[in-house]
Amino acid sequence: MGMMDAVAARVAGGEEVRFRPTGSSMVPLIRSRQLVTVAPVDAAKLEVDDIVLARVAGTLYLHRVTAIAGQRVQIGNNRGRINGWTTRDRVFGLCVDVDGVPRKNVEGKIVRDDPAENT
Image 1: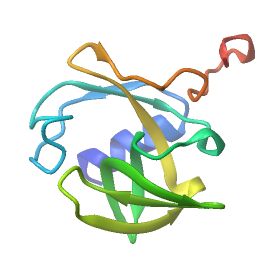
Image 2: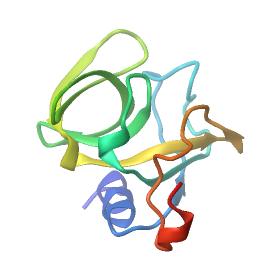
Image 3: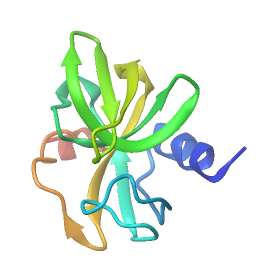
């Protein structure tokens, strides 16, 4: 199991996870080795441009939602490449901050253990 698989398993299990992804496909939103925080997400509340941890055709990506069609979401990087379509149940988490800077438009999308905290 790779690092991204371990992160996805933890997020799917309800944990908020911080890690440092590598690569340049999400520049300037996320640069290689920046510290990101990914939290469990209510996939029904996803919107285009959310940055998510999702499995597409067997590969895990921390990429943008580029389109939504019913129960399917299209995932792509920040350079115009489309990774493909996946179902909402294969979206494990939402990027909520990068190097401690909160991402916009994440309110109400995070799933918390305490139902009173789900806002």
